[in-house]
Every structure is written in structure tokens, then in C-alpha cells.
Image (cartoon, rainbow, N blue to C red; front, side, top):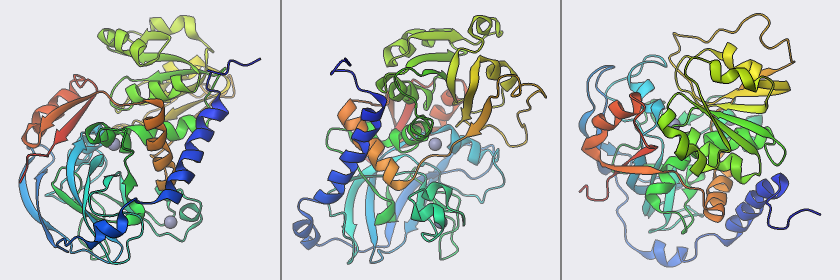
Length: 391
Ligand SMILES: [Zn+2]
Ligand SMILES: [Zn+2]
């Protein structure tokens, strides 16, 4: 007999799909009344913090968000998470960018205006936006709800070209205008500041754990306990999997256990790995810089998979030895965020299962200091810009 209090893998992920369907049916409770409110249709004067070069600090910028189109919602951004990807992007680690650039792809706030044919959102709704703001909508990936893998290239929230040819600008800013199809609803149970990081760190870790069917009986390692890793541990533990954290920071051990890890491996010189050969079915690798995968692959059981979600500088590729994957038929994989529908499922599940990032609130102007701490591995575990007081 199974323990009725135990959430089985199938139940954990099925719960998400059921929640999502129910939310889609219910829609916005007071949509008609809210849309009757008079709201400006923009363009919207916006304050932000922009990168002006690969090396210099972020500095304030004022710019305009586009006027409201029929399917657009205008959002007052109240919180934005600080992701290592933002830093890689401004530093040019992932290719050339056009400066000035406002980054930030974990934002949460409230709808201040909705276009004439917007169906899902009304003024006052609690919403969030992640890494994408549009996609082609007709390729096979878009049609199956995997806009994150759009074959024609989706429009990223920052650093992409929008239809007018302008460079998109991200969430380190006070307002944004987004097509409603790429806006997520934040369940009431989740504080908006805590919701923000889920839009990247949450979905980036949830999606692969789900895809590789992590659950009861799985032995899983989460490599790296940072912004992504600390949420990944919570997701994996809630599925009923046996979770180990691999970290270079011994002082994070107690936190790792608090998030749900049963075991912690300190990755100092690799000697801690010796007793864990062929121990794991799945390794979720969240480390956002170059590291030696040859040390990690032997930790996988036969047919196990190491999935990378952390990405370092493109000019410093990871290399693996000729025999590394052959000896136990192991795989190296990668995963990039998740689709819109899957992201909504993830948010609804976080509300129900009480999964939350651990955040430190900072003012908008505190972002340069926060970036230094992220690089020095001092974030515990996600900095979130609080823009509620910005005018
Ligand atoms: Zn991110
Ligand atoms: Zn597409």
C-alpha cells in the first residue's frame, strides 16, 4: 500500500496540469469591471538600470515603452530577480549586444492597462513575465506549447529585435508592455517579490526535472546551489526523489538540507566524488561557468543523464574525454526554460506545494553591488530588485 500522504511522481506533475486547466477556465474574476477603468494607453515613460558597456556599472536610463496594442497589457513592474544570465549578457559572454541594454527576465507586477481585445487579464491583476515576450506561433514547437524552442527564434525579453526593429529591453525597469499570450498569472498565495525568480530559476529547473521524470525512486544530484539550484532542490525533493546537492561552498550545507537535500557533496578537489560513482539517475547541472564535466559523468548510473541548465562563457567550452559517456551509456543534455503553459503550471504548483525562492530585496540602485555578490557566490539565494517606491 502506498502512503496516501506521499506525493508520487505522477501525482506531483499531474497536479500541475489540473491546476493549470482550472485556472484557464476561471479567467479573471472582475475583468469587465476592471477594464471599465480608465487607464492610459501609453507610450509609457519608464525608468531603468542599463548596461552601457561590457565592463562598466549599470547606470540609470529613461526610455519609452510602446503604446498599448489591442492584445497588449501594460504592466507596472514591482520586482525583478537578478539572474546570472543578465550578467553574462552585459559582459558579452554570450555574444555581442547592443548597448545601452536593460536586462532582467524575472519580473512581477500589476496590470495597469489592457488592450481592447485582451481576454485573459484586467487592470490590477498580479502578473509576471519571464525570458520570452513573443514567438513565431506557427512552427511545430510553438503549436505544441514549447515557445522556448521556437524553430524561428522567439523574441527574448531583452536583447532581441521586436517587430519594429527596436532592441527589446528587460525587467530592470518600472514598466513593460507585453502581448497577453506571454504574460503569466501569479497565484494569490505567492508574494510578488518571491514570484519573480520563479520566471527563470523556477521554470528552468522545473522543466527538465519533469521531462526526465524525476520522482520517487530517482536518485538525483543538483550541481550548484545558487539561484537555480536552491529552487531545483525543492522541486526535486517534492517529487519524492532522493536529492543530493553538489556545491563548492561548505557553508551552504545546512541550507541544502533545509531545501530538501538528503546528502551534500562538497566539490573541493573531487575526492568527495570517489564514493559516489554510478550513484545518480539524473544530475541537474546549474553551474553557470566552465567546469570539468569529466568529474561529474562517472557519478551517473548506466543510462543516466546530466542536464545542463547553467551556461558559462561561450568562448570557454566544456570538453569531455573520449570514453566519458561510453562506459555507462550516459548522456549529456541541456534544457532552456519552458513554454508559457508549462510556466503557468509551475507557478500554480509552487503556490500549492509551498515552493518559494529565498530572496534578498535590494533597491534598483543596489544592482551593481548585487552583481558583485552573485559573481562572488555570496547571493543567498536570489537578489530581487524592489521597485515599489520608484516613481
Ligand atoms: Zn535567468
Ligand atoms: Zn515558433
